[in-house]
Image (cartoon, rainbow, N blue to C red; front, side, top):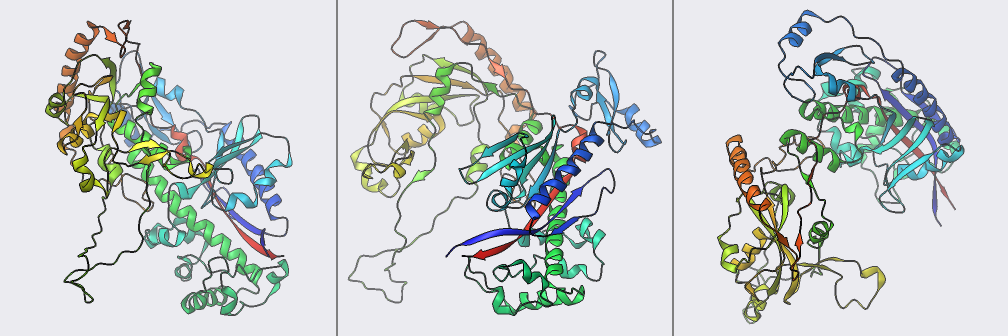
Length: 588
């Protein structure tokens, strides 16, 4: 027996900051997927028409005139005004409102969106599978960004030659259930819920709804004049029954809203889910725009948003590799996650235990965990620019004498000898993991993927950061040759700042609020730049040699990556769509 999930209803709502666009679209019927795509494409074409017909700027208010006249920096790029880059009045082409004083270059560079973002909560995990085949009803292009063969990060459908529907997953930005996310907002922050529901009834809806999914095995159930008994709310997939409290809540909603059948309850359920998600995502979006001048609607996932926020806030220009050997050298140092097998059950035996047996081995259990590993690593000095090969012969003592906060860093290829006298001491957690397939797995293909493997063997030609190598040496690692062969110098003209992002409702941001960033002040950055200039002059006068090769290698030109810029002001007014399906489960 298997279950086939067949959509029977949907709701979507277009959040439009230019004013009221239309009420939530609610539909129930056996052709729900097809109808959903048709209605959505029709709205997308209308929105494309709005974007292609920009409206002029409204007359400035006195306060806006004063802001424009007194401004010394452009609000987009934060650059000062120059004669060769005149100041202009930037405005939103939809709302006609004044955005701020802008340089002519940025004003011309900002573009009108050519897509409409459609947000589902858990699109990748579930919702995409129940309607994606309907996108192929015509020959217009479909683009897909896969995560696996069954899960998609995003996909888009063209509705015209230069406008698309872009389907996105709000769970990629707010990784929690709707029920948990709702608890993070205050009642007065549910703007759209209050717009469509009476204030005396809204308290019933400010939570995740309850729906008898397994009971709905045919469309005819929509005609039932009352809710089924509590036993029919049992979830066979999760093997869970709902609580009496949840059932009573469902009954209260059914009665308070004077619903006449389960079909109307289904409509209210999807409408509530959509408006709740709209309020949640719009609040998150508002914070991102106010704090970082970045609109999440232009991104597919959190990492890209966080990366641009870092570039925008720190204003660093990270050098791109132009030497392919350097790129391969760095890639060889990537470790990946640690592969290990753990005992999941252990019994303590010590004097503090009630069943202590002094004749058996004394055992203690200790739970160790390191919090915020990613944020901790990002708060350290990181490679940034001026990458060159070095022919300096460094000894173990040279490495130990380097500082973790030095303006110059090293990435080294070394041979490491793991002394036998450390094996017992390190047996639970060997150091210096290697990126390789786990050994002794019988050659099974599905188990042969590479990962971080820890073992007590010596290492040959392993790539290590100087900071980590110093930690190993302090733990009595010995360098077999005492000299390090192929090395690379990393000039750091500034320390990439850890993003102090708001810990909002989604755990989007790096959780490093307690990290001490005091060492990243401007005075130190200027000092680093001066040191780097001196060192760069010395490097330009020297020749670089390959390992074991006497021929010289000219230093390739560098290609800095430009700092991130805020997206177009029009993106603030980009319509956002959220959508939810309800399914029938057909048992065969």
